[in-house]
Length: 202
Image (tube, rainbow, N blue to C red; front, side):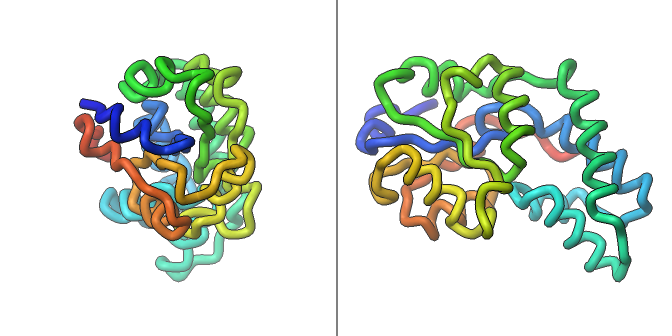
């Protein structure tokens, strides 16, 4: 499943979080459905998949703009996030990448998390899969001016790791993240090719 020798050619590894390290996509799906329905914002499963990896406030703004609506973006985000946290304890689990790649190389390979969610949410998710102490370098969308699909998230992660971008390998499960890594000059692993990704249930 994992091509460890190829991965080890790179000085550092940077991981996306949702769908890459953590099985949080179902909780995200249900939270989106709850909030968007409550605020009567139109959405489709296909469009939500296209927006995978895009920060939550940006996703709300995009959907509202496409529908020609004026919405209170922070209010929608608050409802969505509160529902997500309610669901998290019963839905969260690590992906195969944690046992197969992360844990065997802790302390040996420099690692960081570069995610489209905000830093505090990312840290809560990492704590839920017992990785918060092992992966202390976390770059959330709130730390950069231009989140994914711009390269800033991964460039900042490389900077924090003190490793040049071209020596970093990014593990991702979303098109926006893969574009961001490519724009940063980093090699990528599309984890969707490593195991069966759950389909969006919206």
